[in-house]
Image (cartoon, rainbow, N blue to C red; front, side, top):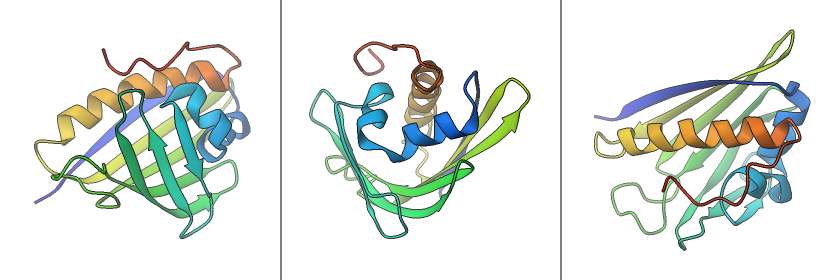
Length: 143
């Protein structure tokens, strides 16, 4: 049986600004990781590395301009969640003063769900800051 988590965060930026931080490698690393290779088209590579040398990898599944990004996800060094074994869906919902970011991560085992929920809560805060033009600082992980 797999678990799903849903994390929501309001961002002060408009959907187009948030969207760019989900599909452009140089903007992704402003809020998560230290390097990223993103090929935002169905079947394109999703890969992100953290400062401690861990790498998440998968493939883009769906990309809808300024509205939605879906990619598979897993860790190259976490046997319980190998690359591409789970799915991250991010919807950007326009609101008067910004964007509601709704992230659903499915296909997680019960051991992985709590860690990923905590991580996505942390990183969506950093995404809000980066997409709004702020500097969230270097990614030090959950520390």
